[in-house]
Length: 138
Image 1: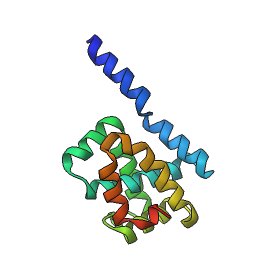
Image 2 (image 1 turned 30 degrees about the horizontal axis):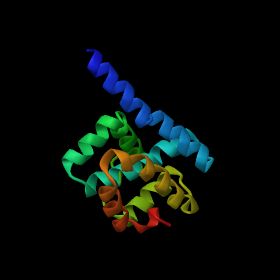
Image 3 (image 1 turned 90 degrees about the vertical axis):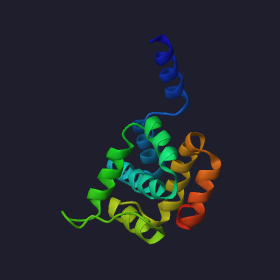
C-alpha cells in the first residue's frame, strides 16, 4: 500500500493532473476552461489514432480523465449524431474550431499539450504525431 501511494504521489508531481493542464492551457490561451478541455480532447483523439494501444494506455493512466476530454471534444463538433471523428489534420482543425479554439491559437495549443505529453509517451511518439499534423507546430 505504501509503495502504491508513493508511486501515485511521485507521478502526480511529475505529470500534473488533467485539471491543471486544462487551467494551464486556458490561462495561456486566455480562453474558458471548457474551450481548453475540448481543444485538449481533440488533440488527444488525434493522438490516439497515431500511437499504439499500449502507448495510449500509458497516457490514459497519467491523465485519468482524458477519455472524458475526448468525449467533450466529440460532442462539441455538432448536433446529436453529427459528431466528427478526428482522424487527420483537416478533421483536427475542424474539431478545434468547433471547440472554440482560434486558428491563431492552434500552434500554441499544440505546443502546450505536446510538451506535457512528451515525458509520458516519449519524444519519438510526439515527433511522429506532429509530423502528420503540421498545424500544431505552427
